[in-house]
Length: 294
DNA sequence: ACGCTATCCTGATCGC
DNA sequence: TGCGATCAGGATAGCG
Image (cartoon, rainbow, N blue to C red; front, side, top):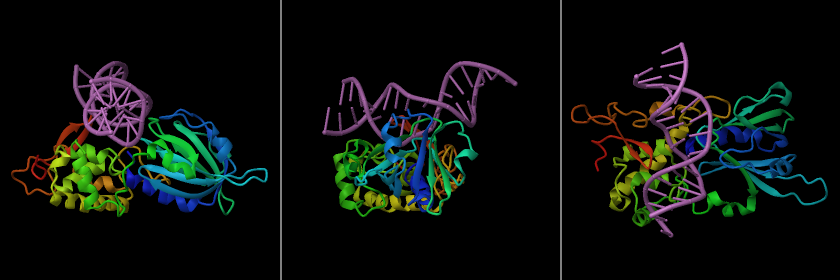
């Protein structure tokens, strides 16, 4: 389940290898993922140059500059990738003919790097929860996914005023608030569970009941957990791997996620009953009933 | 307008 | 051993 640290890690691994590359050919094996891949992708992006890679929320964005055949001005587009639950983007430095597509390999980009090397960039996604889309870069903020989207958790925008105001505005519990992408982006089930555990706040607490002191803990642990996950290269549970196929290591550092029944790492033995699991909004929440009281 | 629920999908795992 | 049931959950349409 690629969340902010996983997408950022993939982006950082990919960027130095494909920036300034030319997209020579795009091979579409299946066009229906979570939504239809636009039919214009090949026409617009083939023969374009990759200007840069970015991450926004859990989206990986690839900025391209087209190469019109006639004397027209180039146009700037962004190819958007979302990895859903099981998406991977894998980079291999091989010629196109050296490898036939694997199962669940839906799209393959054949690139030529700055040193004329051949690069095969493939999008694989067994569960097809991901998406690939295209829009004009300057119209990015009109793109549906980016309208009404919250702020980046590692930016200065995440501060006490912002958090207090939005917690008051919201009428849900803290787990759903952090997961919704409406206030803060990039957090998924794993990191929300880990953040609430370290902050010592029960996931079912109503947002309106969160004190200023608790806000300060959230403001500390949201970036802290994300940065620790980035240092470890993300969390590899099922499908997530880096663009070179290697795994992240943060799953070893999960304190509560997926650890129902285990002892709470922060509690002294005795009264703590260990990690519990509840369902909120159809999703598992892992927490310590001793540290995180309702 | 907001919050909640169902939906999409397949591989891994569990229980009989 | 085999096979059906269950679980995992990000974003979003649709409902109340």
